[in-house]
Image (tube, rainbow, N blue to C red):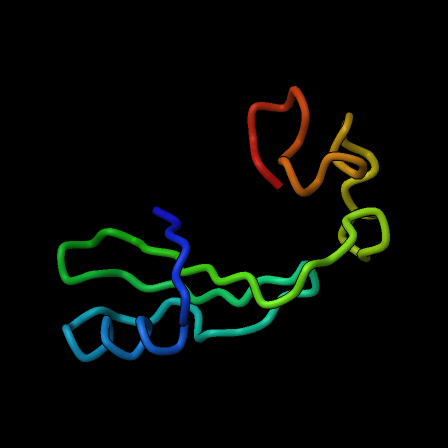
Length: 87
């Protein structure tokens, strides 16, 4: 499950203290998000996500990677058009 939070680092630390295990330490991504992944004591995987910068999707490196997918490069911020999945 992915949830949006105001402070990835604070929630990540609280989750670890409560018994979660770290799958991915908090890190910044080129598309303007800071994310971390954890697994709770019951085996549910959580991805914490926080917007740290507004990035023009047509100018990011990931947009060129997605250009092979119909509609993805130009609609990255809204997800991949018609693909049934989000970028």
